[in-house]
Amino acid sequence: MKKILVLMLVLSLALLFVGCGDDKDDDKVTQISFKNTTNGEITIMIDGTENTLVAGETNGYTFDNNIFVNDQNQIIVNYNVMGIFVAPANMERTVTINKGKTTQTEILADGGVISLRNDYYFAIEDIRIYTGTSTGNNLISQPLATGETIFVLKDPATYTISVRLETDEMEFMSDVVVTDNNLTPVIYDKKVFALENKTASAITYKLDNEATNTVAVNGIVNRELGEEFGAMVDFNYNGLYLFAETLTLDYEAQSYYAFEMNAQGGAIFVVNNTSDNITGVYITQSATNWGPDYMAGSITPGSNFAWTVQEGLWNVKIVDDAGYASEVMNITVHLNQSEYVDYGDKRVKSNPNNIQIETNYIPVNGARVEAN
Image (cartoon, rainbow, N blue to C red):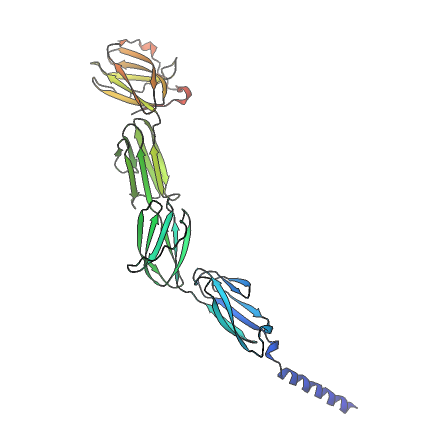
């Protein structure tokens, strides 16, 4: 009896080993193993499924063996890849897979990439990247706005980039080198300073420590600032109908600054028609207080001096070094215009007690007076 049981056990084990030896590919896994060898992230579309791989990552897709029919052991499958270093996603790829096997597939870079970022004030309407003399086609279907970037896949080579702005200005960037599987960043940017004088008098301006420039009435300035100007540029301006000011232009924040200089006030001219020097000028909108003396030096005989003031009604008191003075009340000052006060025959002997120099004087309604 024991011999029969041992014999049956041996027979069962033999049948088991025979069964294992007859294992078919139907029981084995069929896969594609994708490896991303590009320097960017890719997305693979296969059999209706998306799979995203970062640079250097490997991942697999498993097939149901039922896709093999009529004793097939090998079929061709299609897939698409999206990524900045690979050809467009609408370019379908194929791979042959074997039943019960794992097929290794590397996704290689199809070239290098130029990333072109528009950091300029105006939109770019036309971009062409080329070698030789043929510029090719415009690479964008809609304007590239400030702050936007496009990525263009190109074969390794040295390229020229041409851009046309919405202003129809053309710019060229040469010697842009593209290497395989690498990103070449290009930023279109330049420091531009633009100014238009809309006042009725010439104005002056200075950028950083350069010499002072004069802009005539209706004059226009449009300059590209070179490398001698840093990211932060001081813009100083003054004019007969402008109050002097210094602005700091942050060219890291934006690349184009345009200023339309409109009048901020009018002007009062004091004209000395006497043989004495004018040594004191008081300009106020107050009915009770003359405020400070705005005359830092003197106005010699036959000369004049101007103050920029806000538009409105003003009173002027003039004092000379011979002890005479004159008061002119309710002068109407208009925006972007000048009013003249003649100091001459109507002056009278001055009483110094009538003039109070107020160091803590507060102008009415914040009215501003500035020597020009």
